[in-house]
Image (tube, rainbow, N blue to C red; front, side, top):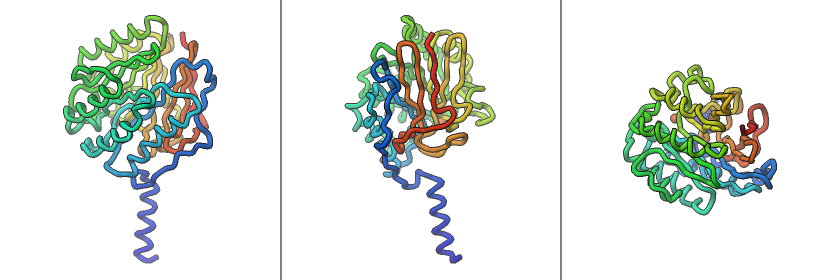
Length: 317
Ligand SMILES: [Fe+2]
């Protein structure tokens, strides 16, 4: 084999392994999303995590696929959730690309985004300000300089919690934020409705932690935050960070009696580590009066995902 062929082959293999290197995916319209019982859906939302956007045009285009697939859905969505690690390195150019895509979706479903450790690890204050300014713009709320917020849609509450200082991997959640979570969960669940909490980092000893990632948990306030969530009924915790994929640890029951559940959203940007490892996979939720269904979806290619752990249903209590 000549050196040139060797190099070409090597580069091709490298590109195949790393979708961030300029592979632009097309969204299929062959099998658009259709809810199981569209007439009776009370609330619907699509979740993605870990876009880790580098400053590359292909990355920006592939991010737009998520919204294109949501737009192509036969059943309308109320919200999209992005569980953090927006940017790969925390550069301004990466946020410019991310929010350029989201700016184009302002007329679509409500966009709820949060920061992850990649957003908070280098330049915490500036990056958090960039993200929270957009949160305020998109949702029309005042976050009062905080990195956390809540937002109501059709009488359901989404509570977004996030680190309040620069961290390498974990989150730092102040007592003030924990009190906010407690207060908001109390309000959200008082009429028997489910509530949705989003944080980039999952709880310790869930989703395969610590085996899948030694330091991949929420951090110092882990137990305190978890105890608050477990106090209330029908709390669904959406998180990212682990890049686990669709596997036997994607879903974790935090408290069976109270129906408190944690869903680890696979990473959007890069192949994941276990089970169905495809990039672009997330879950969408259909909330009914008496149940909630989470279904896996490849939003990058606009295709259904089949196999184990691609559909979870919970009766509401
Ligand atoms: Fe992360």
